[in-house]
Amino acid sequence: MQIDTMDRVGAVRWAAEMLRRDDVLFLDTETTGLDEQAEIVEIAAVDARGTVLLDTLVRPRRPIPVEARAVHGISDAMVAAAPTWPAVQAELARLLRTHPRVVIYNAAFDRRMLAQTARGYRLPPLEAEWHCAMLRYAAFAEERHPRSGDYRWHRLEHAAAALGVAPPTHRALGDVRTCWAVVAAMAALPPR
Image (cartoon, rainbow, N blue to C red):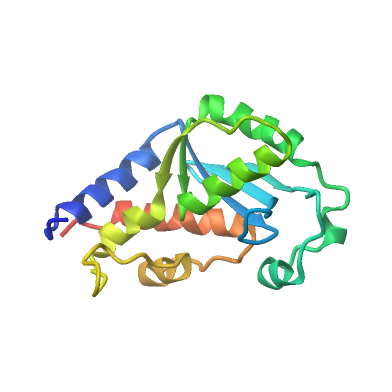
């Protein structure tokens, strides 16, 4: 990868474009864990203006492990009356018809969880144009990994602190709002 300021410029332009569009959805999930059996237990989405379009708990098929509860604070009791994934995926699919561009901080993880949870219910994967805000922020920050030379990935907490926006909460709505604010801050800064 060539080292120059074009990557930062590209990240600023991307951020501005995502906020300018009417067809963009910012998304975040909370899960029962990180492994191949993990499921989504909460999902939230906002549009390019930050308006909440989806914010719901999701009842998983298995109990929420204590390790996951320690991260996000979502308990089995909290999800007992929540909809199951098929109902939530139907609502998300409806949103994707008008908002087919999806911005996620660490998109690879959330995309895997979306597909994995759908597969657990024998549902087709959701189709969208996926954008990773974490990778865009990495280009924006222009910090190189000492071994690979690629841009270094940053946790959402770090990106938020560096840009002076509210930190993530480890709940889907709080984290998606932080992701949106990181993208908005990137768009507002000069590309250098």
